[in-house]
Image (cartoon, rainbow, N blue to C red; front, side, top):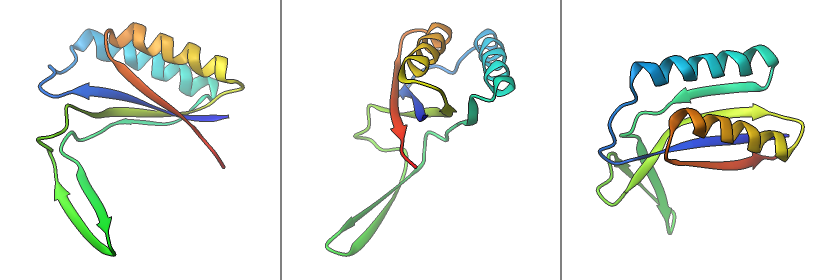
Length: 108
């Protein structure tokens, strides 16, 4: 089962410190070595928004004034069960501290 796990970042949130990066690096290395981690990365907070309305596409460059939070990073994991995914999410949040992770199953 594959899941996309996204860490949400609030506007004006301070950048993580070196200790958090080090601990997260160990966690990522563990998941990579076990074959669970398919892909991961941090995301540019500015981004790009594309919408289509009545066949017309509008492109808006970020950051977006109306957005209170953005996706700060993601991990695509391949696990045996939803319970395993939940445990990974708990471990991730234990490293990052207070915050929100959005998680969606990825269908093939």
